[in-house]
Image (tube, rainbow, N blue to C red):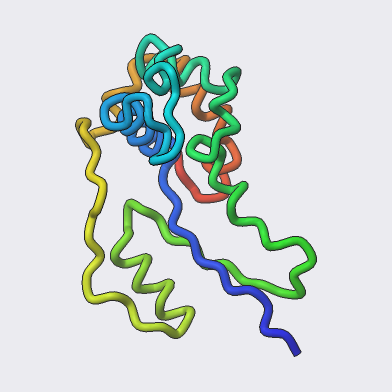
Amino acid sequence: ETLGWNWWTIVRNPFSRLVSVYFDFTLKRGCWYSEKIKHDKPLLSEFKNFEDFCLRLGDSPWKDDIFFKPQVEFIAPPEGSPSWFHVTGQYENLKLDFENICDVLGISPVPELTHQNDGLYDKKWRGYYVSTAQVEAVRKLYKDDLKAFGYDF
């Protein structure tokens, strides 16, 4: 008998995630999407600012980019898998949720999780949302994530 698939995932509030990725792209990466891919113009330069980015992301090609897709799209079981279970933790409770995931999977957690890529922005992400329209645009684009993981603004 097959054991099936055991999946674990750490998810993040889409509102916080968008602030983080936007400023990673605009303040850290410049024109470099990855070590091998360089754009002619700075990343996300077609948007005036973070508000404009949120308002127009759903109508831009960026919405299909791996960095901006809803997280639920990454946790579906492989097609044809006989059985599976999935354990989800949240970035906002990373240490405790990761320990729980390790316990469920029967593995030992690492002694200490370290932060490797600190963002160059104010971590109080709610302050970047300056209009109701901006919040509603993000709610619409990430409605499945908000529902699946219990997040909201």
